[in-house]
Amino acid sequence: MTAPEGLDLPKLQAFLSDEVPGIGELRAELIAGGRSNLTYRLTARSGAGARGGTDGTVDWVLRRPPLGGLTPSAHDMEREYRVVDALQGTNVPVAPTVVHTEDTSVIGAPFAVVGHVAGQVLRSRADLDAHSDDDVHRCANALVDTLVELHAVDPAAVGLETFGRPSGYLERQVRRWYDQWSRVATRELPDIDRLHERLAATCPADSGSAIVHGDFRVDNAILDAGDVGVVRAVVDWEMATLGDPLADLALHVVYSDPAFDPVLGGGAASTSPRMPSREHLVERYARGSGRDVGNLSFALGLGYFKIAVIAEGIHARYVAGHTVGSGFETVGEAVPALVSGGLAALR
View 1 (cartoon, helix red, strand yellow):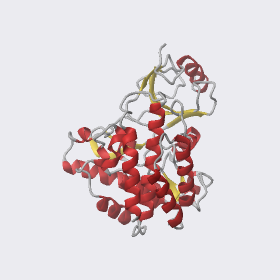
View 2 (cartoon, rainbow, N blue to C red):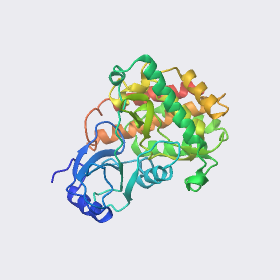
View 3 (cartoon, one colour):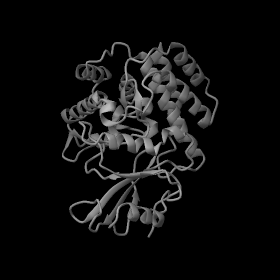
View 4 (cartoon, one colour):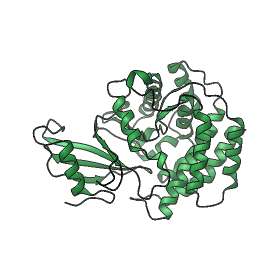
């Protein structure tokens, strides 16, 4: 029984056999993509009582924090599992939940297991090449519509009324990500101090409160295998909370900036010029949600700030030798450009 780095497969087998009786010998592989939590696909034969597929197999996805993680609030397994579990049965497409544990004795870190959702993920511009311009636009529209559906969910109706503090979200985000910068910074970068100072000095009141994903972009969605205009599941919920929905929208828009490209190794799908314009995305969200989106400048600045800190955290793990997989060598290049984008958004 072999396992990719970051998993203790014998202990995981024992744990899952207790939690979900009837599974056979597990096999695991690291899923390519992702620059934050580690994601693995687990497969096994299933027996009577195992929550698996109808063909006699289990097909699951396990997520755990990265090796040598330095930003614990950005790798919260309990938070991710709780929101996905709560959204079962809503209009927001999510994976079926299986089990979650904070017990670090199993694989050395907390982890969550959900069902594998079949489909396709568009990570790079090359992935878009197989699809027409019309399909690319339908995909982008479907993502915005999914964000509208998420922000329309009543937190109390799905048991998430205590998922976060509804007021003061923007102010807390400014403080939190600057604190994270102090944890992960590998260099002096005066512009990020300037960006933080401007955000702190100009922070407005929240525009409202909703369940926010916190990292909403095209490659954090599983699309239908035959139709990229259909979202089968939104994934990577570790930064979800209750917060200002316009911050979620702005972050989605910021991911269209080519400055983000080095974080995913270059040529990210979200930055492709074949995607609709920022203005189109914002207008579609406004029509679908009915929210006032007239002034997004602060939220855009905050989005750039957040991504810059996350990118620096990934770069810090790469420098320390704690990344698993390839394509991390360019991430650090993105940070100064993202900070510049944030300063420009606030002018």
